[in-house]
Length: 240
Ligand SMILES: C[S@@+](CC[C@H](N)C(=O)[O-])C[C@H]1O[C@@H](n2cnc3c(N)ncnc32)[C@H](O)[C@@H]1O
Image 1 (cartoon, rainbow, N blue to C red):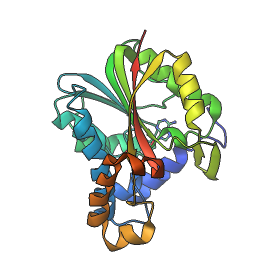
Image 2 (tube, rainbow, N blue to C red):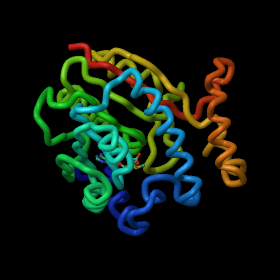
Image 3 (cartoon, rainbow, N blue to C red):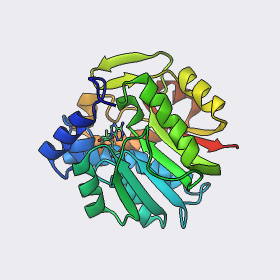
């Protein structure tokens, strides 16, 4: 795809400019320490998930691996990790950071692996950066194609009520849109995990005390706070 709705060049430039640093893929306006604590909130949820979903020995695709932070996480949990990213520099950094079986420069709408190959597909903070609707839907179809039956798809996105385009390189699709496309592709919704109770959403508090914010993330254990979510990690299973 070669059009102005394709932001892979934006990522290549950003990652080469900032370098092998969490701010390349996290939030540019937060420090490394603040970004590390934001990522920790995501690891905490994956740690919880690992009680139900086995990572060890499983073939996992890190779709849009960035600098390899999650590729590294899963390889340390014993998964056989394959990584793709549209940015060549990101793939170089991923190879340096994590123990990867194969890492390739590729876009999510054309995944260079065969059908029914993976037990798990992980895709965090990437799909809302695919602003072209056709490419977004093709990417979900590709996840379906490369996953084995009963394989898990783990997505981090905003899951809001309405579509929106808050920034040029960000397009938020509604939860309803996601669920309807994924249902047609025979995915079943397994579980949802809220993120960012205050961390990252409340800029000032995150700056003042990211550690306290990370602790406050636990407030999501109380159902009453669930409607305040800022983003979610959502798990699907491929039924057929
Ligand atoms: C916000 S970063 C997230 C990186 C990583 N998933 C993480 O959570 O640390 C977005 C990444 O998605 C990649 N990306 C964006 N659009 C893509 C596409 N269509 N195909 C493949 N990678 C893409 C970018 O190059 C960038 O590395």
